[in-house]
Length: 392
Image (cartoon, rainbow, N blue to C red):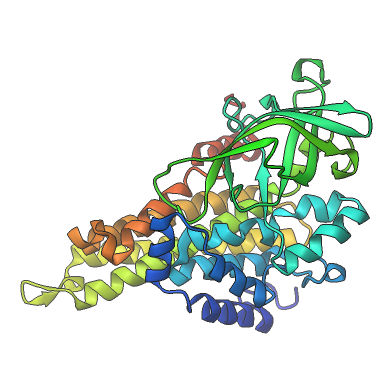
């Protein structure tokens, strides 16, 4: 990079930020509150994003996408969350924006030709099926099994916390094809499929949850789901390797969403603190209100820098595990702290549903758990970056 370090977005990136902010800004608090309370998918918002050509951002141009990097994808994700749509808005499009990476990189030409253009035009909803009730973050312990049967596989098992399963036509599904105790190492013998979510063989049950209710999270009961061999991604037994490929960019995308929700919460808190008069003065004049908000600004800005570094490294083909994990950790932390302080600034009104701050609070809290907990990130940094003994 000539001239050493450069912290500026390119003109194209600034244009993306501005255009997405403008588009997402058309959906107001009332829209998101209504969708959240009705547990209803934000179809109008999804259609608007698809109509703007944004879903195909990282999909290669030959399939109708823009072929852009994770930097551009995170700018999009941040603006979508920052619009006030929060995690409902981000989760509605998250899988389309970068979740198809295993298909893009390892899928067959036929699979790509059939599915990627449909991702781009918004016609195809997909979900990601990895987590299981008995496995949690220890992916090697999944038990959903795909048994070879002629030119197809029969799949049986259970998945949990599958976002958007209700709306989805297809699923990226991680299974075992060799039992764990028979595999050379625990992460061997896992196979990834991209297949139809056949409602006759998959029972989808929404989970009642604390927030982000416009986008469903589901438990899946899979019973003799027949999957053609051509729906397999890459080789049998190499599935873990294929999903690893997308983990760092996913962490960056999540980090950007947490950052966006922290930013909008802070904006709302500042506005309220300027307008709300108690004891004959705006409450924002009080350092007890002002200092936490200023502190959150500093922490959001710092977290954003590590995120920018992470996406730059990824887009330039450099190792980014350290930075991707730190970005998720710091953005989730800063985002939730900002939402918590925004709620405190609003006092009792923050606890009411009228001001939407409680929605930001609930949704930002999720970011410290999903898709990987803060503690697991510290495990990663401790063992893989600091070189301390692995704790589990």
